[in-house]
Structure formats: C-alpha cells, structure tokens
Length: 489
View 1 (tube, rainbow, N blue to C red):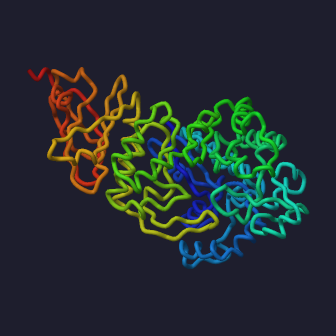
View 2 (view 1 turned 60 degrees about the vertical axis):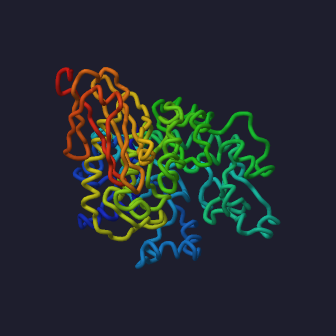
View 3 (view 1 turned 135 degrees about the horizontal axis):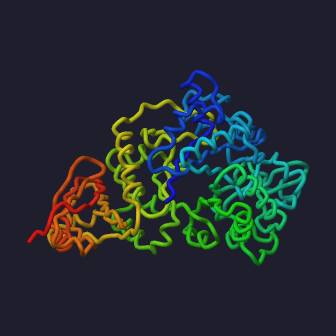
C-alpha cells in the first residue's frame, strides 16, 4: 500500500544547507539524509515544489498584504528574500535551477530508487503563471476575457502577454491573484497536458494533481459556463490518464480532491484521492462519525489517501495535540488505502510554513513524539497486509464508553493484527469479538507493536464474548496475534 512522505523541497534543502554548512541541491543531498528520508514503511517521496516558480507571480505575492501577513505570522523575522513565490504558480515544468535542475532531480530519483522508494512531483492542471509560455503563444488553452471584463472586474481578470485572461479560481472562493485559468474544455490544452505529464513521467514515478476535481466536465461547466465553450463528450481525466499511461504504464496518479468527488475521480483513473472527509471527522467529530465513514466499500477505501497533516492544513501538533494526535495517527496509519505523512510531522512541528516561503521557523524537536512515530511506521507496515475488516465494539447496558472505540483487523496468510483506538477524551471499555473462528481451543498472545506489553488470552474468549479492552483517553494499540499454547480445555 502506498505510503507517501511529503517534503517541501525548497525549505528542506535550505535546512540541509544550514546543517552541513555548504549549499545543498538535489544532486548533493548526502546519502545519510536519503537514509533518513527512507523511513520504514514509506515507499513514495513527494518532492513538493520543484518546478520553476514565476517571477511575475512573486511580484504579485509581495503586493498582497493578506499573504504578507500570513508570512509574518509563520515567520516573524521574514524578509523579502524569504519569499520565493508559490510552487503552484508554475512558470515552466522544468526543475528550478536553484534546486539543482534536471540533473539534480535525476540524481535524487536514483538515490530514492536505490532505497526502494518512488518519486512523485506536482502537477497543477487548473492554472499556470501569468508569464508561462502558453499565455503568449497558445491563448486558446486558457479562459479568455476582453478589455470590458478587465475594466469591470480587475480582481477576476488580468492582462498577460497582450491578452486578457481569467484569473484561476475554484467556484467557492475569490480568484487567486497570481495565476491564470486554463480551459479544461480546450482540445489543445488536453493534448498539451498529456505532453506535460509524459515529460514529468520521464523524470518521476507519479504526480500529485492539485485540485484535480476542478477539471471535471461538470465542475468546470458550473464554474465557467459559456466562457469555456461546449463541454467535450469525454471528461478531462480519463483521456489524459489513458494517454499518459500509454507511455508510462505504472505512473501513479494522486488527486487532491474535495466535495465528495473522490469516487468519481477514482472511476476516472486516479490511483488515489485525498480523504479530506476522514480528516475533518478526526478533527471535529466523534468516533461514531469515523466508524460510519469506514463502512464504505473496502475497494473504494483502498483508493483513498489518509492524512492528519499536509502543506494545506494546520500542523497536527497544533490542532491535535498530545495523545489525541497520536490516536489520529494510529487511525490513518493502519487503514486501507494510501497514507500521507508531512515533513516535520514526526518531529512535532507546530507552525505551518506557507508554500511561498523558502524558509520556515526553527522549532524544537518533540523527542517523545518522534519516538512514537519511530514505532508507528514499522508497526503499520507490518500490520497492513491481507484483508482489512472493521469490528463492532460491544459494551454493557450501563456503560456506553465502547462507542468511543474504533477497531479493525488485518488478516494475512502468515499474520494477524488487531488495531484498537479510543477516539474519545474519556476512558473506554469494550469487548471486541474477533473474526477468526480458528482461535478457539488454543491460547494466544497479543503483542502491542507500539510498546512492550503482551497479553495471553484463551481463543474461545477472543471469539465470544470477545477481547476485553480498557483504554485511556486517546490511547491506541496495534497488536500482533500469535498462538502460544495448546488447547485451553
């Protein structure tokens, strides 16, 4: 199962430059650092933000007081030199020379491959920078406007390369000031997108597609109406993905997706889509809500990306502090589907660095949290094999704390694992009837992979009435289940 480690490439290389006292680019990252990146259980690294950023977009960002305020909040001593522009305001899909260029990326990919890791990069299908080559040479790939549009609504339109274009947007927010809108209905754009992604596929093993749902025919038609022209008979992604995979059959497509459109995007060819709904439930709702979410078809769930942090969300240590954050991490790490870990999450960083910045604040390492993740990642890699099955905790009539318990099993030909999490702020007790009927008549040992505790139990009890668990608030456990003795009589 895919486990992604997201790295903010520009900030990371800057930190390595300070650490080693010399300039570090992608081609100069020491082997010991790549060893650190290749954590147990991680099989994919997302180097976020490697493409050429836009000087025009940077100038716009420096004039936006709201953006500058967010930079000062994250980095109180920020200077103009710390602002690099947005990695999602792409001027060209060419590795930025300051990061080591194409050769540097190739060296990084080789280092990752030598450690059994895939490399994924960004693709921004919805918009480009105002100084992107296409704005001058290929205006039909973009949503166009006129002088009247620009005069009437300068926040929604911009002049670039002698043309007036719509600024990039999604339908629920004001336009983004630093980008221009591509036209998903343009046949010329679709062909160019295939060419772009084939080129990316020559350099990496997959892409994370920014705001992928914005290019779906129905979403795009609602957003842009007549300006986009008539919708094509075929949707955007099935055509693009099929064509790219003619050249790169194993290319991994990951979609940033919202608005409950994950299922539709998976049907259109994506391997994985963000599970933002689970993230929101873990932050704002209770265990019953999470349990209901996990009743979805397991085949569908295998296509989801589980996370409690990424570069668009607050740091988990800030919004899910202490044991609550650890409980959420156990949940996302041990469910079917892909898992996304964010650089700095393991060390307990609390400040979300805006992607425009080339430098983040210095923060102390939370050593106990780092040790916890050092146990969780290999435990999850060990447990997530075979068939996943959710369990229904059982409680006594006079004790409803079992409702706070989440539990599931993983069953493989040579291993059995049980995951239990108290997704509540009070102690919880429950019985968990385990689904393995052949446990009966034998004694079994449950070994907690997150600690050093072991429990010996009779197989008959494990099946009926079930394993009794008593958990502290936000406590999580990952058990390996093994036979220890003969018949229990």
